Amino acid sequence: MKIKGKVHLFGSNVNTDEIIPARYLNTSDLSELAKHVMEDADPEFPSKVKPGDIIVAKENFGCGSSREHAPLAIKAAGVSCVVASSFARIFFRNAINIGLPIVESKEAVAGISSGDIISIDFEKGEIINETTGKVWEIKPFPDFMKQIINSGGLMGYIVQSTKN
Amino acid sequence: MNMTMTEKILADHCGKDKVEPGEFIEAKVDLCLGNDITAPIAIKEFEENIVKTGKNSVFDSEKICLVPDHFTPNKDIKSAEQVKILREFAKKYNIKNYFEVGEVGIEHVLLPEKGLVVPGDLVIGADSHTCTYGGLGAFATGVGSTDLAACMIKGTVWLKVPETIHFTLTGKMQKWVTAKDLILYTIGRIGVSGALYKAMEFDGPVIDSMSIEGRLTMANMAIEAGAKNAIFPIDKKTIDYVKKRTKRKFKIYSSDKSCKYISEFIWDISKVEPQVALPHLPENSKNVSEIGNIPIDQVVIGSCTNGRIEDLRLAAKIFKGRKVHKFVRALIFPGTQSVWLKATKEGLMETFVKAGCVISPPTCGPCLGGHMGILASGERAVSTTNRNFVGRMGHVKSEVYLSGIPVAAASAILGRIASPEELK
Image (cartoon, rainbow over all chains, first blue to last red; front, side):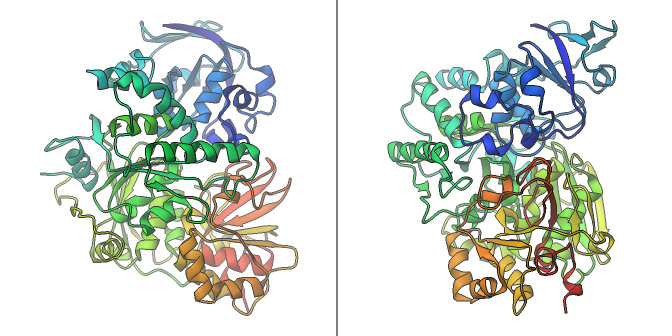
């Protein structure tokens, strides 16, 4: 899988309240959630994000609550991938479980600016900053997580493993 | 065996003699839970996939807890629709532990109180503060809605075995210092990602003399340091607490002396004062004496962190015979109906009302900016809850200062962030 898109850069400790504030959690309607994605971190984000864009953030992205609405809202807004120096653990597993592509790379995040065009090649295991020409290697996911990813998310994996 | 408590519980739940940090396991779950925000997504996924797995019902109707506590009593039509999804699911699959509004409480106060969690259990919850049950010596961790859906089908969860950080707390707690202050202090020392993906194991003389309610308060905020779980020793206090509430049998786990910790901290907490965590991260904790003059608009006492009976007793001790500041809203949120009843019988409610506090039914309401006490632009709250993120309790330009009960109550009276020592 190869993803290419324009970068929206965020800082450290972007929490799930900023990604999707609780005042919108009285629904699980994805198009409703997408209208407010990242609103408390950047009020203009919902209007400026375009399908295929990529979120790049520093340490501990998605810290705070377990709300799966956070990765769901990001995915529903058309964001193609989240690259961060590190992820909070529940956000990380939620993203894997729902099939939102994520990449952890401290080095790459340090070399990416807002507005850059980057591409991520999961087969080759690299991130390319198309704007600057810089390339970084990314670590492959552990085999267990690959099985979930290759099943299209956790439900796909559960359906297959329960049948077997 | 050389294993930590966390490793032993996980090994037992995946049928292995030994597990190592970093290993992926599929573990059997003793109890799973969801609330009115997270369960609707899980239920949708469950219903869409259950037939495809060749099954027609939940893995065990007694091991699922559905706790509509966040926007209840239903704050609007959309919330009512969400709770309805839980209620209909509970009826359809005969879910024993569904709690209607007259029985409900804040999930992490309610479940231990009802004896639904025992030491050594493996509990997952679609709520980040599920780590609370580590206070009872259980392995408990927050997960997402899809994890809950998968668990309701198969009764298992995938986990990466965490490394463990060991905290030994020694010394004597100062007057007005509570379990909440110790966890705020801990997060201040290691940071909001200081325990990312790891287990936080607490012990030492301070923990030995701490009540179960205090341990639950500390374990509750392990997620605020990024941890997977918190775990506390299972001692006589734990056993007494649990045996009063359930007949379920349980196994007593402890860490081997030769187990491996990724890091160890031994802290003398004698000099720690009541803590205040400044906006907008729980790691911004300071001694209350360093805070200076910060006027406030609202105080929130309660939540899954500090909504237990001991918390309300302590608050009442400070409010007794005093008045809330004229321009401060002081809100009391008992954790459960049973806490409410005890507080009434003990006269605490009368103390609160006479002091000028308002008392709510058990709900998560204001803690997450849901309802029942939202902040306006520029307003400041002192709160005994667990998060002070941007906009957490209302307007994006409001501020939340986290504290223990004594500082919150004293601040309500003085109209600024204050220590109870400053009260006349």
